[in-house]
Length: 511
Image (cartoon, rainbow, N blue to C red):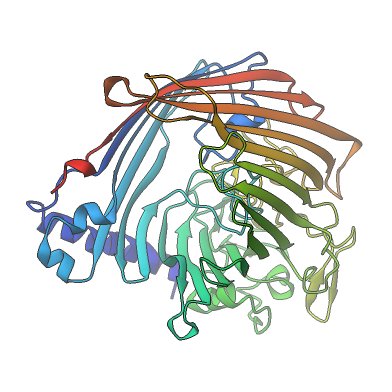
């Protein structure tokens, strides 16, 4: 039984079932609670969009400038549907949906990425959705961070089926002292690439100790990501790595191996190569996270650590030096001139050392983050890194990977500072305070163990952006940003983005 084929049939069915109440109650459901449209332009002195304008933007910002963009969105949240029909409300289910489309045009290309298209259902503490949806995973700052290691919001969202407890929810018998949050998902990658029609297995689980009003709140948990299944573009295979015919394991028992990470019991040499037998089915990675939040009344401190895993190095603690470390200081005043200050340090240089060994069926060392011998398209979707943008793709001039692997630079250290707040600008034309963000990042890039940069490449990337909400025309948002790249990793230059955004919120007009 091929679970990939089965789920490909189930996905449209589940989507139809989720969408059925929308159709059946069409007379009761009113228009979406929010419409938005945005028009903007990118410019750059070098022809390359600067790092901090294009990174962690869900893959919608073009790499080349100048470029024009047009973005439109339609969203309906749970309460906007729930309030329209007593029978639907009485069933205990709530529904919502979202659609977001972007059109980019430059001298070289025209693209129309579908950023979000999903239907979601909630009952009690549980939520399920089908489609594409913007998400981030990991205990890190969500606005000023370099991005969570495994899933940062840098790539276009994958189409998924996901069941979740989406927010920290207190466990009843603990009287709210313990809260839980988690996800379980199945998704699909592209139908092209070195291995085609690959699938995603994803799960996460996080606990919080301490109530929402507690002085101290301790967090801990993990996220687990797996690329698996698929068909090699070359059916001849590779001895010991990809079986003849090019079909990688994708049966129900293989799904069990993917979910559990068990790397024993695969003795069928016609189905499993030496690589599968000594490794795991699929490309596994993720992070184990801990965080501490301290409420100091006027300020809140948030400290976090993400430890990285791709094989047994973390279990042996030999890559424990690698990880994302952060400290955010937040002033508990949303209109403060400086509300958030963030310090981060990212290190991926250890990888368990330069030697790869198998010891008692445990893989250790030379983790080669985001690269993989079988899944050579790497931890990426549509040639955008899914995880931290500081491990970038090594793209050639025609979109190929000239090094034979996804990235040529996964041994990096990054020192990063982020600041956010509200500018002291007043005026009758403004509907609310002007908000801003600033980011300063310095990275030291060593390449990979197999192909080190000689000499190492140093890179500085800076960013400043603001959003000004005007009262004109019922509410307009003016967004502007400027960014600079200087170093030996990216093309030196300065770039900018400016846009106007209009949002229609119909919720206040609902009965």
